[in-house]
Length: 261
Ligand code: NAP
Ligand code: GCO
Image (cartoon, rainbow, N blue to C red; front, side, top):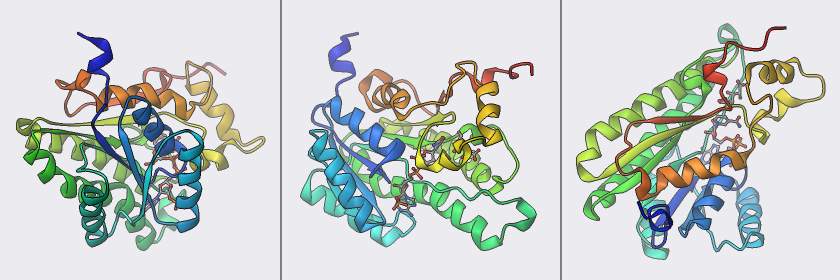
């Protein structure tokens, strides 16, 4: 294997959804570092502007679009605009996501649907928008950002676990249905990562913080940087025979029964 070229993304265009900050920003930055042109979206003008500034400060000439990934018409329009403004999408990272931590019996059906809409329906919508072009051009890469909750449940995250479990199976199904067109669809399953989404769990003295450290052999929370190498691997030709796989980047959580108190 020629390492420099097989991990290179030169000449590729990557769309990372919800990538103004957090895991999406880190993954997009890593893909840029490997040579990809970066496109991202957000639903919020202010965050989009801050994201564009952050990419600029990182030396990345990113293109940003306002788009709600749950809105099929808006997604189709954004993908078409990206092809005109930049280039067709070669690499899609379905990163945008929300979580609502509510005991299931207290969760409204509409709240459940909102989480499913962003975390599962949207990856379907955005993948469906880019796959035809990938087929026309001889292949492509789709990376779905799954979760520990693609494998495990816990109190208060019923909607999120249902969505992320479904996203694991959507990943496998896209791989099954479009692998013959040289499209590889894989997942990344981050463990517990320090981002705004998990900030409430890391507040001073929150019991969850000690709990997660006891469940992680690495005895630390993950950082968005821990996800960068795995993302470049799954976006590059180095993973052309990896399909339908969820790569867990969790410091060993899924392998570990937990530290004895
Ligand atoms: P985050 O900090 O909450 O960022 C989520 C991003 O998604 C934000 O930029 C948000 O935009 C965007 N977004 C939400 N709804 C959207 C919509 N309808 N249309 C477009 N963009 C939308 O989350 P994160 O921690 O970086 O997580 C990113 C992904 O990793 C999520 O799928 C999450 O489930 C997954 N994940 C996170 C962890 C973790 O420990 N942090 C672990 C495993 C998996 P706004 O800023 O405008 O709201
Ligand atoms: C939670 C956390 C997790 C992480 C991540 C773990 O409340 O349990 O938010 O769900 O976000 O998905 O992989």
